[in-house]
Length: 389
Image 1 (cartoon, helix red, strand yellow):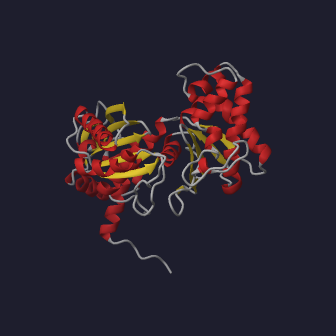
Image 2 (cartoon, one colour):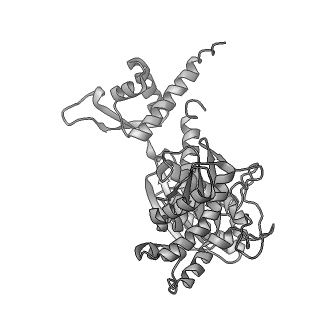
Image 3 (cartoon, helix red, strand yellow):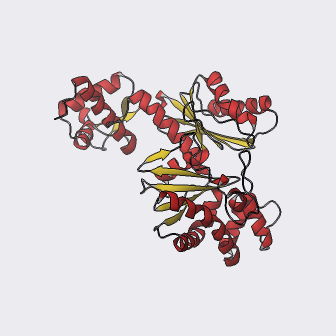
């Protein structure tokens, strides 16, 4: 049975969202360029331009070509300050924040170590966001994206209460919403990193892949057919709890020591570096790995790849993703040298063809992913959902 034609109002909404999407991806365009890119008639484009200007979503930002003048040369662009956004990367003992306009142009950035008692820690984090907003000239935040370690309840969007994370993590989102009157989105850091790697990084050409986060903790994000899979309780990808050989114990419901975490977390890789004589005081795991790559320390890199491949092979056997991205600071530091070693080992353990790639965004992927989540949500609210949604 053929589908019913869209109503005039629905058709207008679809056309408007299509034009806004083009102005976001291509930058300012003339009415004639919008006509060519959308395939709409000239009157339809003229109508949508008038509607979008009237709603305050687009404005004239210049003219096309030094020699051209008049209505046909006007360049239309999205009003970037229609809404302002913030993104947060909340680590165990620190917070980083970026404030942007609606198109993602950075207006201010800030970061600070934050730990201690819940109340003071939350106040310091909120003050950091407020300071960044003021420095960016922002009076009101529309949407805030926040990435944090731990499980996110898929029903409520809240962080689960776990003993391994600071209590202030769970209170921060509510206080941010209360103080700034903004919509606050909370997501697991690995999931946000996967979103960023797919949009702007190592998985830009993949709809199906696994991101293996290698940082202070380890985790994984599962992207299948372009959809992020969170699991029934939000715990899909909690690979740190995976029981593995070589750790001397098994993880428990309250801690992942003895699981894959004990093989591949930052502290485990630092200890591995010490065993190979590579660790200097204050070196991070990423610095150890980067030094090993630069110095061609094959023995350390082989041992690190042996450990990381255990987790990569487990995800491959269960999901057959075809691609595993080594994320976080460690994944980026290891680059293709470490990724190729892991590819060889996964290939020896599994008949499922799997390419292992190094992150191109590293630790910055969490903040980038949080910003993308905030921007997409704000644009959907202001522009309407994209065509087909």
